Length: 456
Ligand SMILES: Cc1cc2nc3c(=O)[nH]c(=O)nc-3n(C[C@H](O)[C@H](O)[C@H](O)COP(=O)(O)OP(=O)(O)OC[C@H]3O[C@@H](n4cnc5c(N)ncnc54)[C@H](O)[C@@H]3O)c2cc1C
Image (tube, rainbow, N blue to C red; front, side):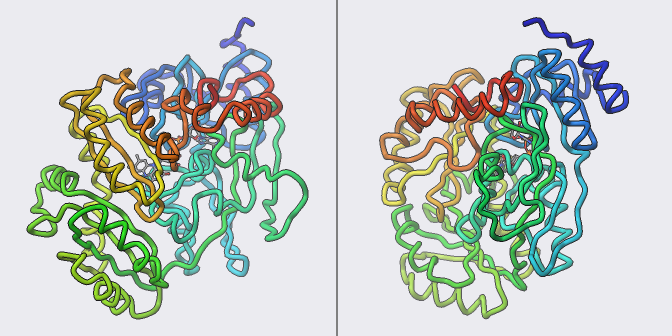
């Protein structure tokens, strides 16, 4: 089929206004490259629709003129799903930034897909509420992108991932039809297939999300952050039952001595605990009770397993401690091009996994730097490898093979994107992938939405 880009863009200019059909290469090139810099595509245009009807017009025109589209929010995705790899046109959702009134009795809010996580959290804060998912890209990542990737983040052990926050949504499917599902925010609605659940984690391959009805959670009245030093990951995993027994637990994050030293060098700071233990757990408590007392009791129960600790309950001090965890991504990026894996393995295998990964990487990528950190409370680790060329998958493939051998998942929260498409069938099996293909064919019959993403 011959695509008609000129005809498509003419229709878009009429529907969106010429100002919202951007072909300036300075803009289009920037949006065709992902946050990591590993994935660089190209696009003839970035479209900036401002209403659901405009998105419908764009999708109908794309079908008619045989044009492929890539939905994009904040472009902070880490698996190459948000950039055009084969000249697709970008549909930038950031004009969908409206914040509806907070429905305090229901603890819900309806927001545009282009609203950033930080904007929604600030909006909800006035009502003593917040979003159950939080992540370091909060100032840029959009709610639509977070739904599309089923984002996880720092508080999954408390509130679940993005799918658990989505009560309803509106989306334009690949057919061009707009569907709304439970934007009224009904707590109970057993009327057929769960379309919001299906679109969560669909990575822009089934529909373009335009509005989302979000569940909100109580914003903790106070918080306490502790950085606990432990000799090894074995002790860190063994500490989880005690930490999980804390009523106010919000987050348990793992960092290692090697990553802490890298971050210290990157930020120009002395290491937070001296001597630096083999591993550190960043623990956050939130609530209205005696949080310092609760953390103190946990430290007593953990006894000598915790060799040293730093605790903060003021905003600046807590931000300083969180920085040791959140600066890992940027410290890795400062070393060069980063290959990112985001995996889960059974917690009982976590110590062996952490010990084995650097050697597996060295075996196929001698001299590479491997950085491990992540959401230990969820059994989820981020593996960052710096060294291999952008198109060299060998290091991550070695990590993924180990993950699959251990019965884990090659994507805990970032999604499949283009980075892990060749692992989907090995992970999920051919019957599941065939079922996904059938769903894709039904909702995007011409295959115009993110054609190179997710499905093999
Ligand atoms: C520093 C940093 C820290 C991060 N930490 C975490 C973390 O802790 N946990 C985690 O899960 N992720 C994390 N991420 C990854 C990223 O922030 C999430 O994947 C986020 O959900 C992406 O949102 P976005 O708006 O940037 O989406 P984009 O990057 O623009 O898009 C991501 C995918 O969603 C699709 N998409 C975007 N918007 C829409 C829409 N409206 N409708 C349909 N499809 C759409 C895109 O096509 C693409 O496939 C981190 C990223 C960075 C840079």
